[in-house]
Length: 107
Image 1 (tube, rainbow, N blue to C red):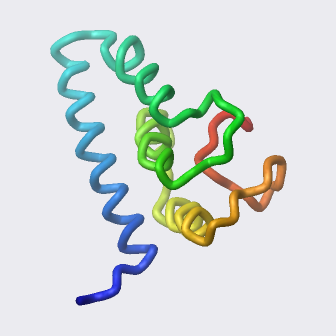
Image 2: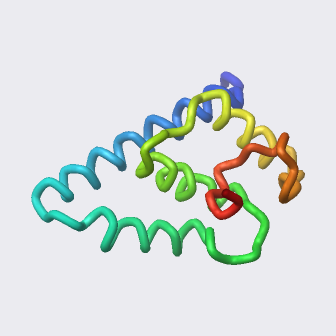
């Protein structure tokens, strides 16, 4: 069995997030306001973005999709870097400028 690299996993996660975004956009086209009234609050709850817990691998897909909902979607290098950090078991240090993560509460 082939070994999956972190970059391949990042590409896969970004592809899944893009397909989820397409579903959200199609619902938004048929029901205006769905994206920010229903989808975004549910994703914020799922990602535990407002809690004081460290970012975990379980929260990462929701955080990635939230980032995709914004104007600037994350690039592959950033997602790969964040995944490597999460898979290593070392949470990024808050306030560290080198720790450029998907945590949108730090801006």
